[in-house]
Length: 344
Image (tube, rainbow, N blue to C red; front, side, top):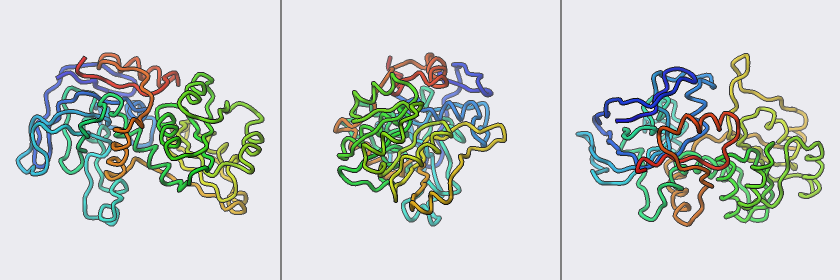
């Protein structure tokens, strides 16, 4: 099969490799589409502290048809259309798994980082963690829901906002566009922030009520005037550490910053930002982390996807074009999501 293989940071090529064989509770999926997530680029380039298992196949937003099942499979059958997301499997027994927070399982296995991903004609999934795909879901626009969509959706759930609240979305890439779509459906007042005016124009088209360039020195004052004191929450999808510091200045009292985007590690191998302890205490502000959603979160996001709540698809590509998309992502030039269509 053809696969996009990463042999070392920034060393990519499309190669012919063996089709994997499912064992135990695994299923073999012939992929139809796969989203390209910024996380794929970070993992491939070893931007984060954990080193991938090179050579590796990235990708964790795949939709396809099950063509073979392992001998212990009982829930998924050949012919089912399923989604293969970020989490390959978890232990199923720890306090997080039994409370429906399996994404926090310390024994979780991650697609692409540990298991081969979805930038290939075939991939392997676990029958308990692949997601049934609704028959009326557009599988091109719907593929990025399996990571980008559910990540933004869960972040907004974590913010606990109500209709009419103000939310600032920092970083108008793939996650940011998803966040705008969900925030619009939730009846929120949306402020989009980025350093790219083209992305801000796209945000306005997608439903943002206000847009600000992060380099605008009057940004904090203007947002506080518009919102009468600051936003109720910031959904921070940016991969710049400085954006997390900026977010704290535009929160109203008791506001929440939900951190979603992960910047590359600095020269010391850390991913951090400065935080005023006094201001955080006196304003009773909250800083939350939100990783990829659970299986339940993903099911909800997929249902919303059937109702047209999806991210903007900027490019539909072939496997051979992934390298070009990685280049655009690294430069911050991609507007919307890129999706591989293996049927092309």
